[in-house]
Picture (cartoon, rainbow, N blue to C red):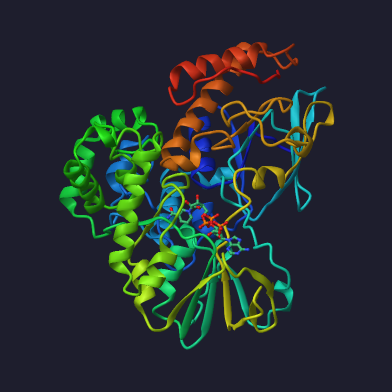
Length: 490
Ligand code: NAP
């Protein structure tokens, strides 16, 4: 068995950049990927309408001038097939494929204190003994089915947005139902509703969704981004969301009502969610400021949806930006179509999936040919807990996280030496432009491993000594990661 210095679990954007950085540092790396292709979440999420909610030029690797200059995004917001093509292009461009094992799911990882390394095994019985393991498994990986009994009895077709078939699903003339109105549900509904015979959205919580104002990108726009990259990079790296929006200049109540409207309309016309949350300094801090933005979005929904009863049902009641805001291209407009129904399952809950469709608490049954679940993921922790970890003294991850996930900045976990996570629980990850967070994490981890290799031998250290010092050095270089080192290990 030839073992790499670092075994990486996953070959999405995180895993691919991790291989590249480690190679540059002269450290051998192997990525083990369950899917038959690279791309991670962009491989699995191929439901109709799937598209990034961050502008394409920003949702790209920033670390390589060559990559930045050679890839031409076609639209302001990229569709999933183009992002997957980009992932494959990066894999070829950086010659990563020789360091990736596909179709292989990591099953377990056991810390071997006597060897100061990990024994990693795959479901198909292969094994590696790397000194370091990096979980590049993504924070939205394990699909979550709705907690509704009877799915196995459904005679129609049951689909999950995160596990969409490769071949097209023909919804023409079919009665299609959708559970879930987060980003995935909003995008899938917008694309599929006009094609379906009848499309029913079973809504429990209405989503804040704002228009993308998506359009083709021009050569001039792409060139302008490249020309200004140095300046934009400083901006993105110093912004909390790693996005090129804001910073806001004023608190919402410090400006006149007319000025508030003007600022909100300006952000709305730019499109996307991040401009809207960067309108005022206190959108996430002051209830009054939050209400200003939320009311503005609700007004836009009322303008778009002709039936006032439906419009009110579609207006979210909670605060805005407590969840990631959805970005759409005509979502609310689908509810003006005759073939689209909005079913309020907050007041009349779905109690059962039946052979024919969905049964509500009132006893009403909705008959369906296709049921789409857009019910999200076992987010953040799902893919990590799916691996049977045994850390120091056989500690399992489930026990370590019995009271919820505890990590050092979402990067390392006490009791699991030489184990790193990219965009793990507690990290900025899903609140940001993820590809930028991935870059920060990968660079921090590479620095940390490089430093550990330079300053330690293979004997386990006592306490938080060497890794702690290495992490401190890494922390100083990456302003997004501020905190105290709590990890132990060699
Ligand atoms: P999600 O945000 O977790 O939404 C799940 C939806 O399913 C919610 O509307 C939820 O309602 C509903 N649901 C769950 N169980 C239900 C039940 N029993 N009855 C009725 N409704 C039920 O999932 P997601 O849309 O897949 O998004 C997950 C993450 O991926 C988000 O962070 C999102 O930003 C990200 N994402 C990003 C993009 C993009 O870049 N454009 C695309 C897709 C997803 P409740 O709210 O009432 O629980």
